[in-house]
Image 1 (cartoon, one colour):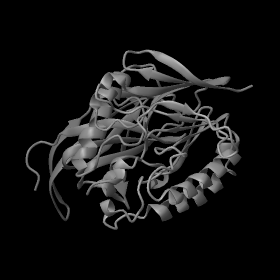
Image 2: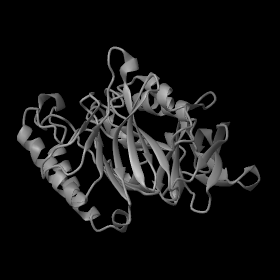
Image 3: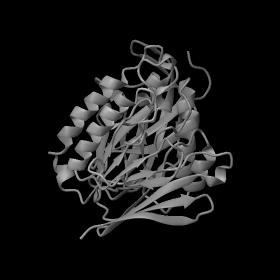
Length: 367
């Protein structure tokens, strides 16, 4: 049984599902229901709940409610959860209800100018969120892998990803999640997808916002499947082959064809062949590069190395630049984030330091 009042332990956070829907996610300390009230103003609120197969979810601490946004440029919303102390047949003993404050969300689907931050290799350093995300100078954020060190319990997901994210974005700036090799580690790594909203429930997906078409790839681990560290419990080689097949299908999609800018997010850079078993890694990375070349990708955002750089290979294997973000150092004020500003005429990619210094590193211009 659940005793005491239910509390919100993280969130709410916003994730974009597609041009017509967003997901509101939050967690509670006790099993409870999940409801979102949303609308253009307080006088015109609608309600949505999380349900499965006709049953309102009432026995979980993680909550994802999908709401429509197609007819609204700006909405307000708040979440609530009601503790259920006991269920027996039709006899339900309810506990308290907890509410969040009202939040605002602006529809990004049709905006012709977008600004986003890419943060990779945060490795549990919450001050990185605190530095870059409380500002109002961006539209969304991409967490490009290795946000935490390992997922030993679901509290790691709540305390080290969702909670600091909601505090610094105030639940009003959406995020996209790219899995890094560290998010595949730990006893609760298999629970991660329950706590975030993934298009098609996969860690590889596409999304379109304004003039941007983006591909998210999951590079998996940086060691062979047979490595003793994984105790025979991973199958990333076949998983990456599955993504290769999926990636080929994108070329025929209208979203890809109609986009002005085409970009990719992947944690491990596509020229990273240095580990043991490099032939295995080189095979999937070459296959992905061949497809991305055909797709005329404008830029690939990656991390993993902890060294910020713009890598341009003068050969047919890479027809796009690799934009590598920074990572944590002994002196955290040396961390560098990637800030990208997109307009109809150009995409300007910059490195941003802790002190606010901005250095333009790559510009893509369109007619």
